[in-house]
Length: 245
Ligand code: SF4
Image 1 (cartoon, rainbow, N blue to C red):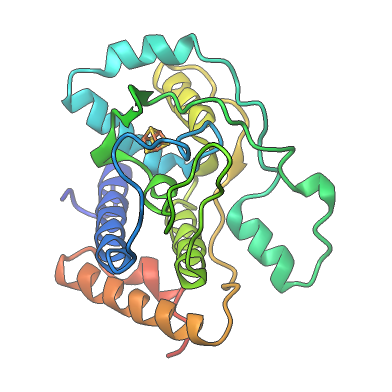
Image 2 (cartoon, rainbow, N blue to C red; image 1 turned 180 degrees about the horizontal axis):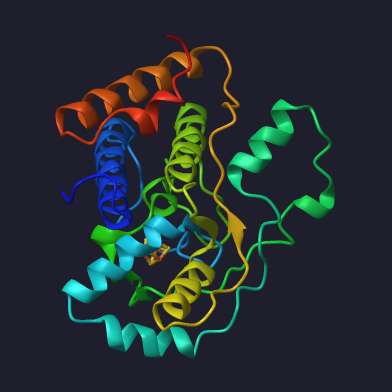
């Protein structure tokens, strides 16, 4: 890893943090007997959101696979999403924790059910580099036409908490939004153009957890901190998120 202190070194460190988080989360989530299988792609829509740091990881993957130019051409032909959330996950959490009214105007206009740009033949073409929003998909029953996903409440609680931690790790000038918006903006910046105006990723203001959920998330955050320390990533990205010290 490049020395901390350079902008590139810091991005590499945050990408390493993301990889550790994916690993800790992935191991924990294995306990759920999910019905999800390769070929079921009901969740793979244009409504998936992510941070710009996760977008950088996707571009790294495409470049290494020799697919970057092909993807940029596809991206240039792709229209904007049909809806955009008005708040990031951490802005929403801050509003709830501050007991502010979250008006209907802040809620997404609705889901954009058009297929994800990376979906081909009902399979993900960037599976190893998919963002957390995709990694957290999971249903205990087969879903799709006419059947909604069914997810354990603790699974949903951990998904939300980890989504917040990832947004926090990308809040050093990074941004947040629908996947195609993020990728188009990164592509524009790399081409020397100005990226579109997107929501800034925000630090974690606190979590929206109750009872047993606090203990489970705390345990996972401690595990993540230990992993980061062991890998020389440092613990600062997780220290501000700890629930009980
Ligand atoms: S990136 Fe892959 S897993 Fe995520 S929504 Fe797109 S096709 Fe599905």
